Length: 268
Ligand SMILES: Nc1ncnc2c1ncn2[C@@H]1O[C@H](COP(=O)(O)OP(=O)(O)OP(=O)(O)O)[C@@H](O)[C@H]1O
Ligand SMILES: [Mg+2]
Image (cartoon, rainbow, N blue to C red; front, side, top):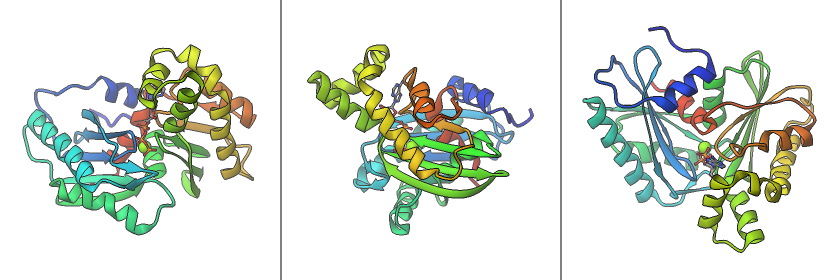
């Protein structure tokens, strides 16, 4: 089978994959530690996704591992499940850190994976990982996750500018919770269950994220913006960003799998 290069088809395949009867290795493993969710993706020898699994994380804040034991437990849990489903040991992996955090904090992501049982661990930044899935030649890749908004400007497929600011799905939950008198957990559930009702309340929060993107991409206003990460999966969020930025915004299905898939593509 050929390696799937169309990002939309790759994302659909990742979202649909379930434990196969047999897999052809060598396998590539990606671990996205994530503020909201820890995601593990396994690709077969042809680069096709064969296993995607997620576990609520809560072990990271603003990209920094704040609960090492919880991060290790989530990663080890995902690794054990993947090994059982795929029928063999998984010893190498790639993992990622948000752009612009201190090197020592980025290394903590490696140590989490090593402590969770991976012997050989490669570290990439999240935006470069997202680019490995989207294959954007000239454009801005924006990863809006639970905690932060990472931005990478690519020219001729090469990373030119990398930046990151606080602001993501968790901040949208705080806005919703305040407006509707809900707990943050209730707001998170409401946002997913009633996106049409939530959107008007979230417009100022989305514009704030858009303004971060604008400030991080001064001088490249002509380049389109490609959206990765779960926080902008609310229907209509892309239009709010496009309106604020006055430039084309490109969306993808299952956007929260873009970075984890690209991390797996970065694995040895
Ligand atoms: N269907 C959805 N509608 C709205 N928001 C969503 C949806 N699915 C996920 N989210 C939001 O996406 C966020 C998680 O996205 P993602 O998995 O990309 O973040 P993360 O990688 O864990 O965080 P970070 O990259 O900041 O460390 C959460 O805040 C969640 O509320
Ligand atoms: Mg993320």
